[in-house]
Image (spheres, rainbow, N blue to C red):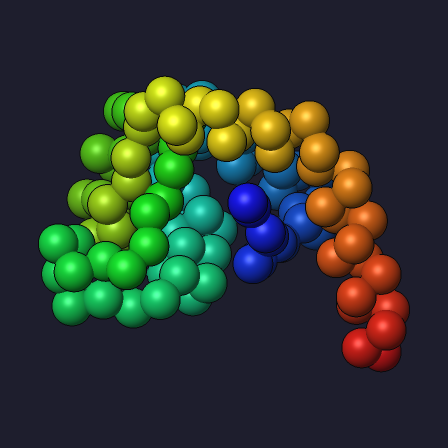
Length: 104
């Protein structure tokens, strides 16, 4: 039902702290903005997006849109998907690491 398309671990503890503080303050960090704009397909307008970006905080969605032009949605389906991702994240990340080893 869900597959991980992109993943970017933080390079330092300081970078992780800066980003979590930004998200907690309902701000879009430069790292998050760069990640979203490079990993999501480009669209000419938010109405023609061929993907859905699910978020866990509706206020953050407004900031993401103003910063990147990407529309994010927050609803019951998103909440359930995020719950499932948290539950199975270790399996998903293990598969990504195994794929990276095979590519190398």
